[in-house]
Image (cartoon, rainbow, N blue to C red; front, side, top):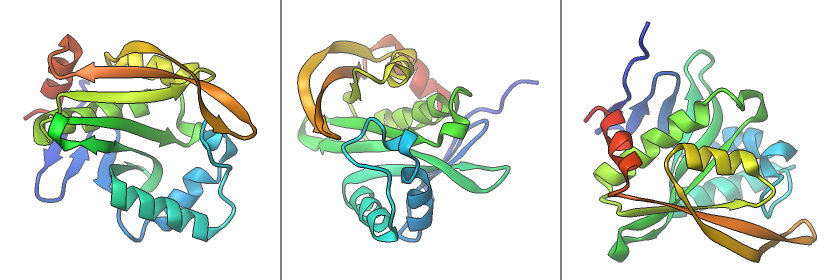
Amino acid sequence: MPMPPNRYEAETRVIRTPRLLLRPLRADDVDHVMAIYNDPEVTRHYELDAMTSREQGQSMLDFFLEHHDRYGLIDPATDKMIGTCGLFQWEHENNMASLGYDLLPGFWGRGLMREAAVAVLAHGFIHKNLNRVSALTARENPRSARLLQSLGFSLEGRLREFAFWKGAYHDMHMFSLLRHDPATTELIASLGI
């Protein structure tokens, strides 16, 4: 049986994909954010440690609400938030943003983040008039690099010792996706608009 198409509900900004419901993060999502970011596997390639307090979760949520166009990834079967995905570092004059995402490890390897990222990227190119989306990933995180490449992102280069976390410098890989890239046409078509 074919998967249902992605669907965007403009009035609520909810995006429905074949297996997920993506909704904008809300002020009452602190416990959901905390549940995601208290997992050390989620934070392994971040400049932060696994969260241990609700205050840390509130701080992360406040940051997302102020600086990101971030969606909670809801598993419709359980109504549980299993990750987030969104756009941030907006440069409106250049029609650019960056892509960020996280997913609970129990849901890795199923293609769910790819499904969510396709919807978020399509939304960005269609409704936010983006021309370029960039993404940084740690060199030690090949899973994230594979996701970006599967979405059509191009590797632009390695930023040597670009980031410092958990007591060490880390090389980062810079990826980008442009509006006129062939993969973007497919992403836009996938939103069903």
